[in-house]
Each structure stands twice: as structure tokens, then as C-alpha cells.
Length: 108
Image 1 (cartoon, rainbow, N blue to C red):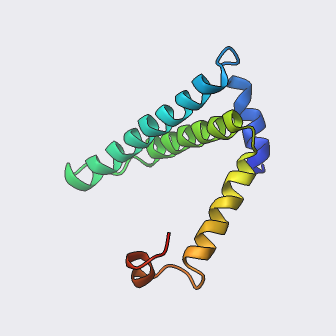
Image 2 (tube, helix red, strand yellow):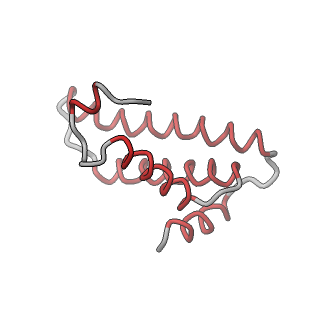
């Protein structure tokens, strides 16, 4: 499945009664909420001696993907374009790959 196919399939479950602003707000709030749930799973693993619940983490990452797709939809662009633009930014920032030096002294 391509990311654009994912976006199309995921957006079948989008609440089409939301306006553009509401959809965008729901997307960014959902990203925060689902990212927080993923973070909590890892926190419990690292600091509370829980086994890493891989299945729960995979589900939360899927929820993050859904809200990312909704955000792209609200902006009227494809998820593929969001990802392509991110790669462009990363290539400019780290042309030879990540380095701590470039991270500390990076140009915005």
C-alpha cells in the first residue's frame, strides 16, 4: 500500500461534517493525544519495568498515522507530499546524514 492509498482508505472514516478548521484542529490534537499514548507505553517500559507492549505501540503509531493523514487532508495535500517535503528538509539539514555537530549548529 502506498501512503496515498493509506490516506484515501483512512479518510473513509473521517467525520465529513467537520469544517476545514475543525478538521485541522482535530488532526493536531489527535496527533498530540496519540503520540502521548505511544510515549506512555515506552515510559512504562523504560521506567516502570513493564515489558514493551509492542502490539499496543504499533496500534498507537497507526493512530498517529491516521491523524497525520487527516492533517494533510485538511490542508488539501497528499500524505506523500508531506513526507516528500520532510525528506527535502532533512536532506538540507543533514546532507551527509545525521551528525550531532550539525544538529547543535544547524541553520534554520
